[in-house]
Image (cartoon, rainbow, N blue to C red; front, side):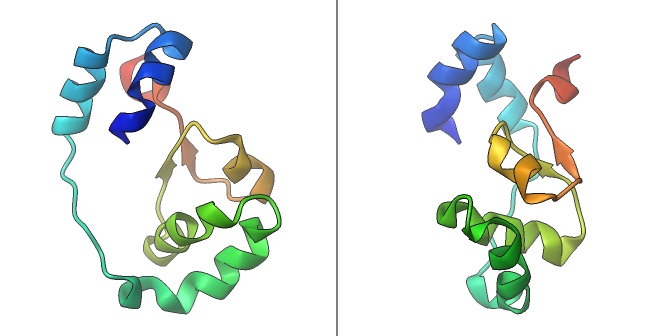
Length: 91
């Protein structure tokens, strides 16, 4: 996530310090691939033809039936509708 901070800073007009602060407030947890492997085929159908690198994160979001926080336009094109943008948190 942090590798995108310089781009987000320019695009959204938010300092990297503010982005870091927002990120540190989130309760983050890491999940093993085995946890969401039953959703990989569904995610592949939705987004693999757009960007194969997004399959795993979409599978995890589908597993939880939750919102996905991303600036990546590929997710919208995939048809996955539970999307949040960074400005949704700071607006």
